Length: 479
Image (cartoon, rainbow, N blue to C red; front, side):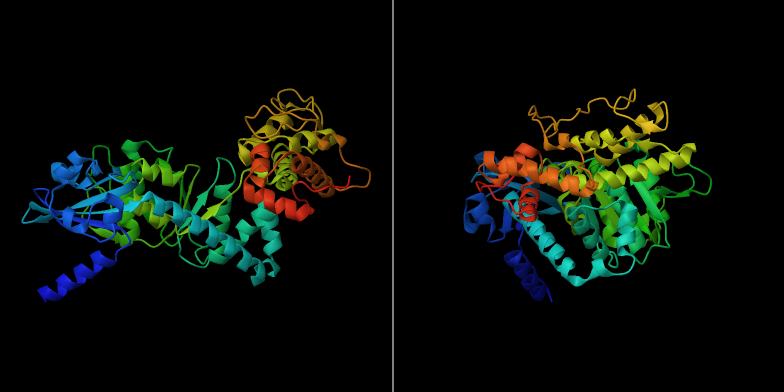
């Protein structure tokens, strides 16, 4: 049986995508995976004839994650720079026998591989979106009404909604990416409503709003007497409260590393242990997480666990900023205006020239900033018409000019200053304005990447918009 186990272990090491090191408690390298040689610049035989102490001294490992485990006796994760100049994320775990450290097993992943994996995710998401458009989901009864509730008008946000609609019946973890205020929570709630757990609870946790000292007790719960001041009878944590429903972890990048390790165990084992307790409790929930940070960079910096990153990044969904989907602004404004009128018992309307201001701003705070701004303008208006000169409501909004990307100093007269033509709908006016801006950029810029940088939007968005308007760089555009 021992020989069979050895053969199985040999196969795992030889065929693994990650690069494995097996090290004795004194630091001597016992075995490495074949692919490690290309990353660390030494043959497998040479690596197995040395120690991690020597490799660290020679600069082959800078630093050694296995040596860190030997020093502390605890698992470790860090970023290494290898002798070949490559940067890798390395994780190491101790192996104990009879209470004493016997070995250290480490695995590392080249960040080049991580970058390729992200590109593969992006490609798969684009292909998935193409498949969804052909699948007929958009034609299902009620789908358009559901999009109306979300105020989705732009093509890019329809693709996001289609993707969420398709994955909703599954239990796959969803990672929502996007700037602060783009609407990640609203789409997480819609994903919950579309799924089979819609009758269960939707538990929202802002990971950046709970003090670290209270996070474990709030997230995992506690038993009676677990600490001073613990409630009699104990308390179920937020994870347990999500039983049969959806657990939405907003700003997951703010999770402390210690909590990340415990959350990973909950996801892997589908069970949670309250503070001060030894009994595991089974939990069944759909995990949805969101962040406005670059989690891959936080992994690289050692601030986010690589294994947790893989667990939550099953279905990545990117919500673009409001400046890249201005078609959604009118619906969002009308929805917020309806809320305010209902809340305060009035029937205020927007003056015609206000729309030019709304469509011309970049809204760096996205939907949240737009809604807050509109509430200020609503409260500041002296009568039932919200005008450009409403006191306190229009700080930072240009009048009749398009300001370009947020934070930029480019300012040019924009076709939007023409306003809405007689008999023209707002949608048509927006399309005309967008086409005029893009046509101008096609004459000035030499690539779609240059246009994207000038306008403060993504390059794929530029390609999609040029195709929609029948434009191309360097071509003569009829006025």
